[in-house]
Image 1 (cartoon, rainbow, N blue to C red):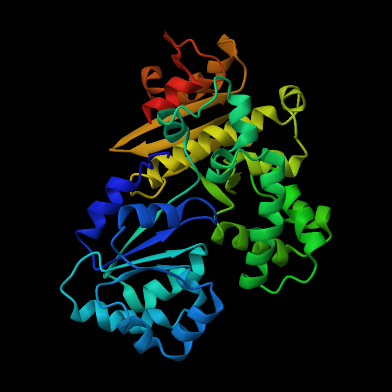
Image 2: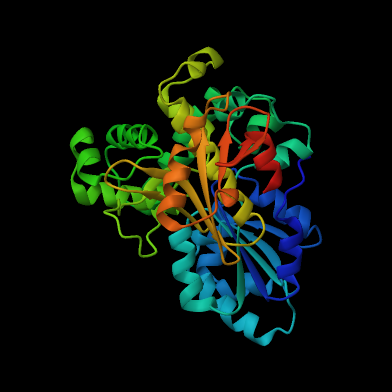
Length: 386
């Protein structure tokens, strides 16, 4: 079994709050983690029709069936339970009473903010991180294999070929979720939209361009992007400004939480195809950025990631702002360090007055080097340091 980094933070929050809300994409391991963390609690799946009917028609009776609390899985399927939980949590003096899991961020958050604000801790579980796979000796020596396999637990636990898992994941979960969140009639067009998003990873979002390519409206693009964000399929990284006197790109970039899904959507079904694919650099960038995001979420924090890019195409792929320090990071898929890797770092340091010693270049090789122009780190060393 793969040990999840979030587990100790899960236990810690359960000592401090009456309820825990565990969010994340479908099949990321939320149920497994919740049941492992609290094996003594009854497990209730609210997607089962008879259980859901009981909870919908007699919410008081349903909750009274679990006086010692329970794990309520996919609770967003019965949203009015939140209002009844409010009274129970207010009367109880017990922390960690209910564990609530869900796969739809805004369906859950709407109810939490209305009924359970101040009574719950929010945690997010994403697919396996590289560190989690490494600890379980399931990691790969080359990053290309990581790109194609992604991090969804079932790919590893059931030894399913990545393309078989992600094909079924799209049809079984994503298709169903978009119909639950929004009445999307034309799934074929939505699949086209999903593929166009995959082919734009690491690029500033251009709503009009995506709309034109997919034959849909600008507002539909915004709505569908919101669906994918709410379902933890993709996320956006905002541009970093901080009063820099340059004409800057102001639109966010999009990334997927899992590169295995991106490879499937791009039609990459073999290692040879990935090795020479024109999007390999973007996939490597997505891999590193999503791993950094996981390092935040899996330690109980929200990800605070940025990028910087001006109108003359000078850019920094990733900027971390934490503990009063700003760290610029360039991401390069190549496996040989060249001076060219530090070009944008040098420009950033000149512009901001930052020291090159604080800057990093994460690249696809293994050897690390400290240069006067910055610190080059192999991808494995960087991910191990998160």
